[in-house]
Image 1 (tube, rainbow, N blue to C red):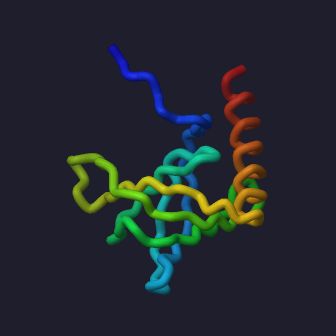
Image 2: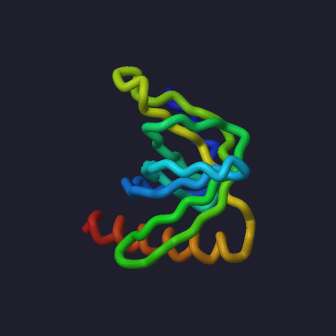
Length: 118
């Protein structure tokens, strides 16, 4: 028997390359958004990362530029066959600009998933 999801919002699978700025360390690395929703996202890094920091994600999706600010909540189990790959759970800041970008991205992802389901 599967457990019911605790998620309040739909998560959209995606594979969006992103630049990640770790605050306050002012260090950057490349990552990939694995899935995303209004409540948060799953981020894959191939470089070191750590929970408990703030992160700014910058990327382009379908020609639109996005900036999302988030907290890195925790590291989650990644593929055991690839120990260099790290997955992190993110929670987005409730800043108006972050929410505006997030809502626009989710609307675009929702349209894409609706089109592929047909």
